[in-house]
Amino acid sequence: MKMPSKVDVLIIGAGPAGSTAAALLHQEGFQTLVVEKQTFPRFVIGESLLPHSMDLLQEAGLLDAVKKQNFMRKFGAVFLRGREQCDFDFADQFTAGWDHTYQVPRADFDKTLADEAAARGAPILYEHGVAAVEFDSDRARITIEHSGQTSEVCARFVLDCSGYGRVLPRLLGLERPSRFPAREALFAHISGDERPAGRQEGKIWVCLHSGGAWIWVIPFSNGNTSVGVVAEPEFFQRYPGAPEEQLRTVLMSEPNAAARLARMQYVFAPKRITGFACSVTQFYGPHFALVGNATEFLDPVFSSGVTLALASANRAARVLTRQLRGEPADWEAEYAQYMQQGIEAFRAYVAAWYEGHLPRIFFAAQRNPAVMKQICSVLAGYVWDQANPYVTQAARALPLLAQVAGR
Ligand code: FAD
Image 1 (cartoon, rainbow, N blue to C red):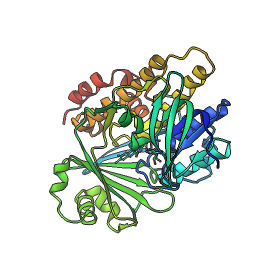
Image 2 (cartoon, rainbow, N blue to C red):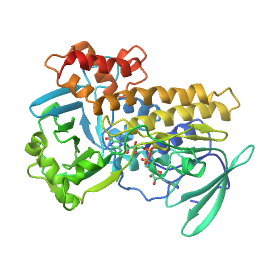
Image 3 (tube, rainbow, N blue to C red):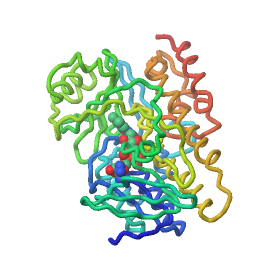
Image 4 (cartoon, helix red, strand yellow):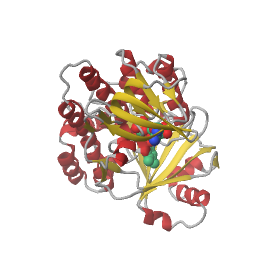
């Protein structure tokens, strides 16, 4: 593909945010160019989707392509602590929405979205990295690197969907530390997972480890399973040895994971990410917006990352469509504040998880079914439902509910 010298929108990164934004903007008739520094398929972590992502994939015209991949259907989430369980099923939730979503190896999922966006006519340049961006009064000039050469493209607008690359936050000095402490994740794909049957098979397991960590178990339809441990770095220091041994020992020291994963074999050696929580001082500026993980990433515990990436791509593409057509576009109200609403709802849940409020609620001897349905809708990603008090009042309501719940 020949690189154009001028486009309407240059999109940095072909992850879920970039492909979704490209598909939506192309649908509206704009000339887009996605610049992706890697080749696809490529590994990235973040494999458990939320039901609300189905609405967003559908709006971008990408859901049918995803459905054809026969990914593992995910009907809910099971939280486990020793012998205690709290089983959420997305069929039993407050907000009207999808009762399932998928567990996706991201190499396959991201390639599916990118290929579908490209097949619809939104071009993607692989192995091209954005190295610099300069903004004039009416446009952006983007320097792109490829095989040691650089070239320049002009765009009316730049969407930074570079995820962990955080291209514009770094270049423009927009980085802000997260309010959460630096946590670490150690994870791998394994075979030999002995799964529950039927509707339970595809649910994510989140196991609370008595030493102050939690474990994810995410089963894929190819027979492999993603397993990971998240904790503060001190936790891992108690488990010396190579990452293979460290991860196995932690998994085998939690009874639910141990029973299920006793025959596990690594598909690849464990990987580690430390200090993944990040934030920014602003979500947009003249001729640019930050989308997906290039904005704020909270924590993996409620699998919110891809859904927030898709929601922000959807929202940014809609505001940008109006701006490029010369219609009124209020980035503050329609984009930044809207996204903050969803992020704040998840932030309250992440905080309540680590402060122990949510474990007390989840493992209470008696749970209020109406409240659990409202919480289930948050776990399904419906964090903009203003009728749900466990969306709008979460930061206040969760600690109070935990007090009533007891232990
Ligand atoms: P990405 O998926 O990171 O895509 C960005 C793309 O930009 C990449 O392909 C990259 O190569 C490209 N790029 C970067 N720099 C440049 C450059 N200079 N030029 C060109 N291209 C560039 N989320 C969930 O929804 N469910 C989960 O279960 C989950 N688990 C997680 C577990 C852990 C331990 C962590 C850390 C995160 C998890 N997440 C999860 C979050 C998830 O990984 C991200 O939210 C998601 O990948 C964000 O998508 P994105 O499109 O914004 O960015």
